[in-house]
Image 1: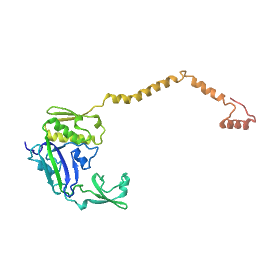
Image 2 (image 1 turned 90 degrees about the vertical axis):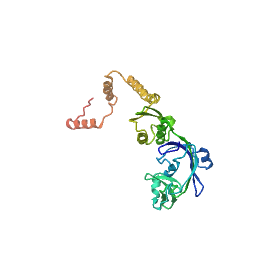
Image 3 (image 1 turned 60 degrees about the vertical axis):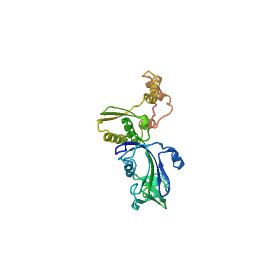
Image 4 (image 1 turned 30 degrees about the vertical axis):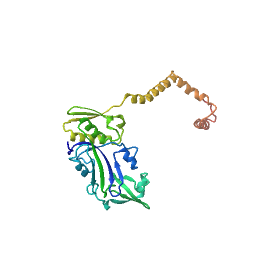
Length: 295
């Protein structure tokens, strides 16, 4: 059946810049290595796409409509159909100190994020850095070699793909789901618990699922904290409790012992007079002419 808008697809592609012939992106591991753009932290596998949602450039997705699954195509996009023409107004001069304050040593060609927007450093001068907020592929003619690997039909696969898209740090196989027609529970794996932006991702996942599965009334996220972790954390409090018990046993039981010690203390220092005692005795001597010794 030909591809239509709203279909869930898995596609492989390689993207080249027509003007230079440079390969700038691919889903294929071998191609990435040959083009010397391979990154160890990338997962090279077919890309999940929903036609019409612009997970790829809009014109590219539109070109796939009507194509049969399994088809391989080469599609060329002019700048207007790709990432647009370059806009000189998106070039900025930024004080070098702003990079230094963030611990960044700017280098031409490096991609950075400033004011919440991605940018490319074009030049570094005396105290200023030229920053380009245009998309790196703006003004370029793009050539996609693309193949449709699969049209997804299974409901669980679609749900897990939507989840993984919002939490790409964790593979979809590590999520478990249980559901009926109206209720869905997503079990979140432990390695995702402390990811930055997890709560925002949950909201986005919920919006996606409600859009594509309108019969869902309830969507729940379940996080399970295993007992082994709790036991490891409880070792320290238990040891502390034992130490406190030992300390209580070591204290002298008689209540009168501290009082006897307080009375005995002055006797050990009878040969030594404190300034206050001496002053008192001098005062007495001035009145009586004699100095009385008192304990």
